[in-house]
Length: 333
Image (tube, rainbow, N blue to C red; front, top):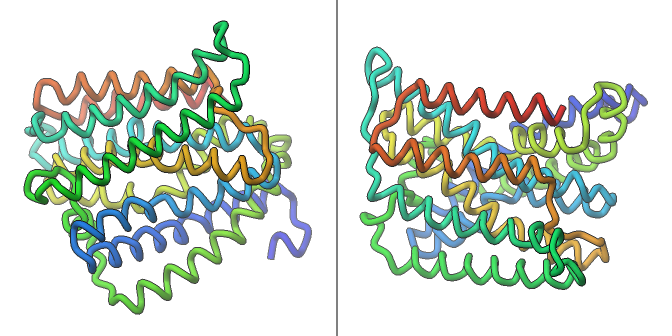
């Protein structure tokens, strides 16, 4: 209604962003239902591919509109949002659910492999930016595409590893995430909801991207701020819900694992898909990323290693991570 009545661009942007929240949640819940239906092997692959569908739709629309900086920032923002927003909230909830804000146990042996994969993914995303600022920077577009292929191959290896690893030996499983989300849907309902929500997400993404410059002018938001904080906030609702629900149910390892796993999925699957879509559109897109955004995800990984290393979590650590998020939001505003 705001769009067709020529409402101010900032208002239309806000309405589209708010509308994306339930749409993204519906896509996430529908894919969790479908993934749980087919077991850990097939379902795990399906869940891994489909969980970033809402984010991919927004990115495709933004690439087609030529908003390349917004796309770069949203990729980093998705990783950063899980590490410096979702995980801190889970730590805060876990701390108070454990009784009077006491520390709660974390299984380092189960979380460490997930963090290791995330470190590999983040290191791969850092490489093109470092190459750009050295004598290796020539032909960066072709080099970036090669990095995308390597990321995708690493993702395939990760999927194969998870298929061959027994569910009881993995921290994050389809059944565990489905149980944490608490979505008792039928298959037919999940398919209908997925189709309808995907269509609605396409429409809202068009409006969101169309009004990016208008909202920047009206509210003073930079494209970097919108990509790092606004877009990830509205398109990754399902993962946030599952992680928070797991923390509320005192499944602390699962809550931390979901946040780390979601960040890994964005780095290893959504990033190379974005590169290939940009190539199809003929967009000059590279993985030369803003320095402050890269620092944010590196700091996120380092801080989470420090938190998990002592095998304990607390609300204080979660609150400290949220302050780091506020710092980056202030600097990027």
